[in-house]
Length: 322
Image (cartoon, rainbow, N blue to C red):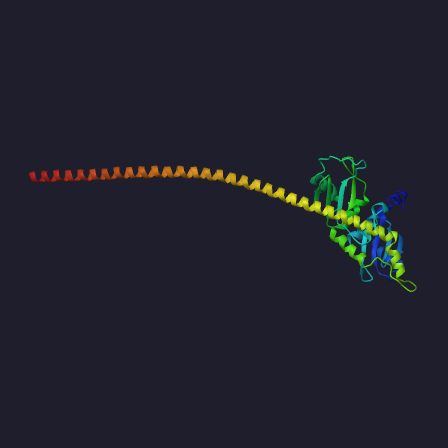
């Protein structure tokens, strides 16, 4: 692997979870080498501090990571593996070991706490840039130049984070995964039922479990989960308000369109009414003219009949004289 490849090591790294407790490093590598050569493989077996087995793998090429992700789901030892790109420590957290997210929160990275006015930060421009990472299901524009993008695949979100930093008109963007309230509730239930607690074995007692509950690791995990839950509720409410607002605007615009259509229909009805009145008037004139013509015709017939009678009488009188 070249020096440049080492610099971009993040594009070669893969996290594999939900491994069988009986899995062996050689067996895992043999499976992965169907896609490409494995450079490194760190297998973490289940123990009293963790109940699952997982691994961090370094593949030979980034394309092999893409092939692995595009060919999901993967099964090994009758278990469905959880595959995701291993994110750098500065943009990763403990929650990612349990949850995936198809949603990403995008906002301007403002180090001076100054509001950034960027009128071009709109649906069209955002979509044109971020749709290269995958199929976008929904895009929600929020206040203060923020937006939430929902993808069809969580891998799209990981790719965006791996390609950080991102810029919009020279402004650096802050990219964060957004977990829904339902996802965080699910994770909270996991902690509540002590799934994260070490399983006590021989020579261990409840005191060790109590120590873990009061450990910095557990407390930091709970604090992070609480902060993420607060942010999730806030963003969720903003999305709902924005959805309601957009629906309200659509209703108003639709109402305006309908009013314009009604106005146009009224104009057409008025025109048709005027044409109808003109036709009625023409019909009345024709009827009057027809009636007049019929009277004249009847009068002419009567006059002709009278003339015929008069001529017949004259002929008869002449015949008698002769």
